[in-house]
Image (cartoon, rainbow, N blue to C red; front, side, top):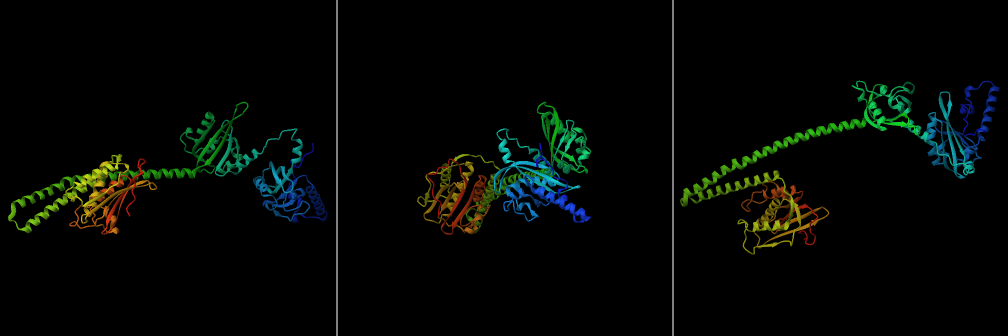
Length: 563
């Protein structure tokens, strides 16, 4: 059986035979003989079955025979090509994309082949056997031979007689993958752990030439010097586990030929003969993970530093809390005792002087007693504010309507806030939603807001206090408010209202300690909510607070927020 172009190799070097170097010319007869030989070779290539392209190392086409020109969409087979010309300007984009990996391998000295279906510019889909062969010129690759052999007709005539042969280019694909890997090595070991196949990717990653490592134990090549025991070698551990389990993935330090080390993730797979089950060795996939290892170590150091800082901050907070406890104890015991003495001696002085004392003296005694009482109230408020930050919340399901009613009863019976009947008009909602929270603390919020509404609307006849609520589903919260028609305040100073001991009115105009709204803010914020105030001087104020929305909140009785 005569050989086909797909099986034959072109002469070495085809370029040297086709294009004689000018400096190689000698006698006239020798030159004429060489030219005649080149012409015969050119005629042979022109009529060769199949498309033949001769390419230089930059993939410029130097020669294309008649059938090769028929694959060029913009040219006729009978027309000559303007050469040299880049290959990508001649072939279809899909065909060129499929050929590029094989052309790249041929430039590295590998012979490649594949069977594939491609679109011919004039004949439509054709089955093509592709052969890519390097052109060796001495010790280097001078170019590439590309041969496209149309096997459509041949395969159609033999399709009924023989089944289609399976594709066999997977070995080439695997070889190309092993050649092109970066920062990863693939190599093979025999059953004793000795190197049986050393790919270029392994030589590139580990630095050992193929001739020096073949047959060598892989543990001797990759083990890091100073390892205390063989069991600590990741490659030894990997081989042992792969032999028992079939596969092993082991991280650890590995050594290169130059003595440098890198952190590798090594995957070892035991290979067995399908028929006999005999152990044939191992396939090794090793990847350089040094950068990942460095990042992991850096994160661990940062975590340790963060944990140390958190521990230090925790210790500092514990010390601060201990100081606050000591301060609260001191306020509760040490400051109350002098106040009690002042109040007691003021009463004794008032009794001793009786009615014979001058009016100015009695007035001074009253001022001293009022100041002592006010200071006692400040101390009580400060202690309450301090305890609020330390006491845990006792959350449960609460009916906000019941909390509002109990606070309203307390405020209405407070002697300092009591007003004659008919002087206060209350506008209350029909019902209020349920919330999750601490009932005792939320009652204090209602107490303070209702008391403030009554206190600062005292000059109005009648005073009007409105309570309402609205569900804000978009923000996931329920908003409650207390509105009055009192004296109001400057809205530019609204943020100061919620600070400790902050007041926007003189004490002789409206009594108070300046702690109530600060308590409200801390209570609401501890429940995950927020509180704010709006006002127009002389027309009244609106104090609002929002709590996280709960699924059980009703929607039928919502009021619109105040304008």
